[in-house]
Structures are given as structure tokens and as C-alpha cells.
Length: 169
Length: 169
Image: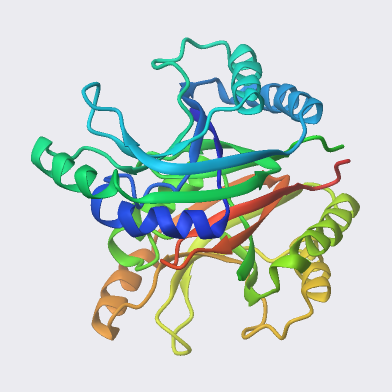
């Protein structure tokens, strides 16, 4: 089964992201707006409980932290993904690295914390959308106190397997 | 904010449900296949942590239980919802009632455990689909060991707030 680990930001930030995702993100209907901590990886179903236990132990060692979003950005020329840029912090990088060492899978990209609002855009569409969004400040800050382990259904949709609260239990 | 409480069944049952939902369920893109324990209710955002604590205490008092799905059924003539009928058991009814007493909101319908696969169908479409599905046995059984508290975004999509494991912590 395919699994992934994400943060769902607050409803207000998700609503803001969805206003763009609806038009520009081909994954709009597959998952709510999210920040990917660990991108999708294959795991045997009988190992997932043990993995979840390890993730829970890790979550307990961390504390809730601040998440800041100041502007939109793009991964071009690597790809045409447009995203809300999340300010990197040692807390989120440490959390990513702790989870990556548990999951123990090579990650395709280096970790750039972000919330995707557009993907699979044509070059023209990317230019149009990004040239308008890059001028818009966001200026959003919130506390992250939890994250989620998800699995993917055959249709591409993601379902939550378990929630982990930072610093709890 | 609008909240709801659901069970996500196993991937295999969700995949089976999605094969029908894709064509017949207008909520297909808003939430993965689910069994509603408490239908949507309004709650103040600042009360949700306390509510989650109460739900967690309740989840601890319950044990994982078996969920059996034997056939499709329909809520007609009340409405044109077609669903996988989940066999009622004292465990799931007790869990629903314990959660209902915490949430303390009048429930629109009496509790009939089910997984919706079609809704908002015209009468003709309902007849066509249901006459074919009602003859199909399902014969599925699995263990439920968790459920989830969700909130609804402005676009109708549901995001998981927290997972509760039965009999844990």
C-alpha cells in the first residue's frame, strides 16, 4: 500500500489554498490542502502498525511549532508546481528528518516545506498564474500541533490512517 | 466550523465503494468512503479541543469490533441514497450513542450504520442502479480499531482533525 505523511494546516489556510487549487491543481479532489512531510512510499500492510508506533514515539519528542507562510513561489524550472512557501525552521526540518529516518526511503526531492496550489500546468498557464500570485503577500502564521499518516486508494484519493499530536501521550 | 465523526473502513472496502461512488455519489470528491457515526454539526472552534478530549476518553472505554457488510440497500422512499448495509451490532450502536451524548446535538435520522455509494440520483437512475446492486452479495468482514473527527472546508471537502483508537492510551 502507498503511504504518505502530511500536515493539514488550519481551515483558513486550507480554504485560501483551495480557492486556487480548484482551478489549478489536478490533485484538488484527491486530498485536502496539505504540507507533505514525507512523500508517498510503499509499505507492507502488516508493517504499518509498527511504523505508526515509531512515528508516535517521534511525535512525542517534538513540541508544537509555528508555521509561517509569507508568499507564493514556484519550483520552475524543475516542474510547474506553484505553492505557498512555508518558511523553513529547524523544527519542521528536524521533524522531516526524524520521520525520514523512520521511513528510511530515499526522498525524490530535498525537503522544501510548501503547500501546493497548482500543478500539471502548461508553461503558459504557469506563467500567467505565477506572475499574478508572486506579487501577492500572504502573511499567515499558525501553530502546528499534529500531523497525519495517510494511505492512498486505488483511485488516487488519500485516507487518513492516524493522527499524531506533537508532544503528547 | 462544521464537524463530523466517521469510520474509514479498510482500503479494500473503500476501493469497492469508490467503484460505485465515482459514478453515483455527488460527494465522491469531498471525502473518502466512510461510515458516519455522527453527522455534521456546528461547534465553536475554541471548544473542539475539549470535545476531542471527551471523545478520546470515550474511545478508550471501547474495544475494536467486527464490521460486517453483506449487501447493498437503499433509504428509499425517504431519499435516493444507495449504500452498503453494515450489520448493526451492539458495539457500533453503543459507540454511536456514547458519541451522540458527548456531541449533544439532535440527530436528523435514527442511526443506521451504512457506507453510501450513491446519492442525489434521479428516481429512474436510482431504480436502475439499485435493481442491479440489490442482487449482489458483498460478504465482507473486518475489524474496526479507530475512528476520526473531521471538519468541513468552505468547498465542502472534509479534513481529518484527529484519529481516535478504540481501547488505547
